[in-house]
Length: 168
Image (tube, rainbow, N blue to C red; front, side, top):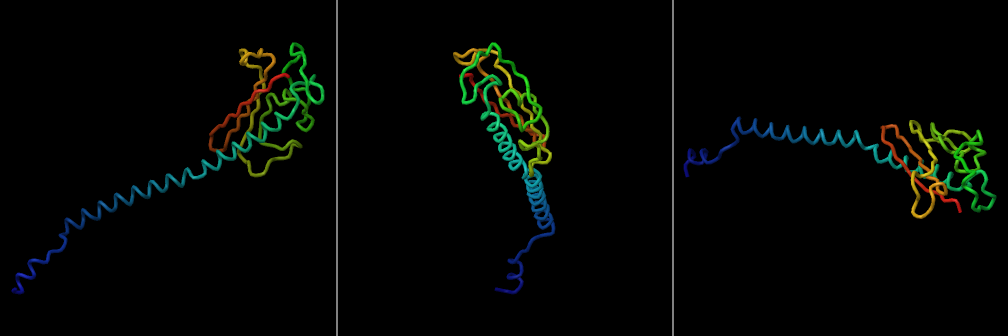
């Protein structure tokens, strides 16, 4: 084979092909960088959601352990729900003795003694206690209290936990 024939069979990339390759690779890398930035921006969301669940559960467990009403005897027992009202009788959370006392509790997360809960900066908690608007299964609405704990995270997400307590 002659030298001229050998040189013509070896072809490289033209300038146009090289520019098109660079543009395609640049667009692909820009898309990947944007996807990476989006994932980094939202990486804290699962952690905040998990902290919201932990906080809501802590408040709900504290409330559920209390008596159904101020008139409920120590050790439990059914009371006459006609004389029962949903109202906070005690001022300090450390002396709350029934679930009604938590009605309209709101603010930054605190421990029972009033000290702040570490690691929950920017969170807020709201508690509502009410009777359902209608009978609950076969139980009269006045014999049931719905407890709603709402936790708002610093990113604006809210988590709501509901529980029902029956007078028995």
